[in-house]
Amino acid sequence: MIHADRPAEARAATSHDLTLVPALLLQGPALQPALTGRISLGAPVVRPLSGVQAAEGDGDWGGFLESQSAHYDYLLLSLVCSFRPSPEGAPFTDAGIGIRLEAPGQPVERQPIAWSISPKKRTVPVAPSGSLALTANLMFIDAGVEFTPHEGGREELFVVGMGERDCDPEWRFTATPDTPLVGDEALALVVRTPAGAPAQAHITVAATVRQRRFGLIPYRAELPPALRAIDLREAAPAGPVTGPAPGA
Image 1 (cartoon, rainbow, N blue to C red):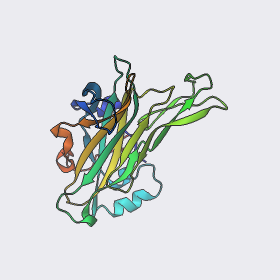
Image 2 (cartoon, rainbow, N blue to C red):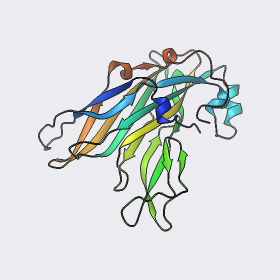
Image 3 (cartoon, helix red, strand yellow):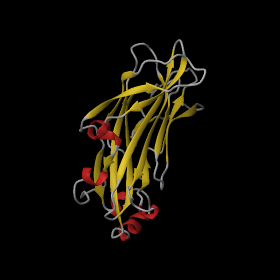
Image 4 (cartoon, rainbow, N blue to C red):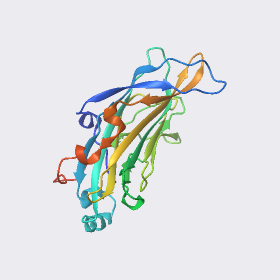
């Protein structure tokens, strides 16, 4: 399993503020204005990996992936999405970040896939009192924090990742009463692509905002050209990184 970079490290490159455009809904409220300053996306960081690094934490996969190194390349794509609170008190209720991988002009068998993604799932406890109480047993994992819930308490999903071994992985975030969708979220995936084949990543971002007057309003993000089509080959330095696997 890979581990996403810490937000401060993964966001060393330029951060792009995204414009959120409301979706048109039949029988919905009047068109709302676009939102700015609510979501930003750091420029993706791409690094080549060896087969062993690509299989970090996945048992016996290291030897297998290394044996396939003449046929496949492995690239670590990491990015940070930052969610900010609204001064008008209109919170995010959910959000989604998707990545579509492709090799333009290549047949189906030479298309890149997401070999592994991080985080795959993260839950947050729901305290009986309605407030989130931290304990001394908290520990950092993947892109965020894992909390030890109170005895007898329950947990709710905050983020779930899906799409391993596919060309269109995604992450879905859901705010809970105790955990608003605010702050930095580090995401990462290992891309497996046929050796020498081109590889591109296209990012999409969407979110839902709860307006006091109009209720739930879905938005999609307008991405700058630098994020619409990322050439993973061009962005990655030559050769796999040495030393411990990224995030270890």
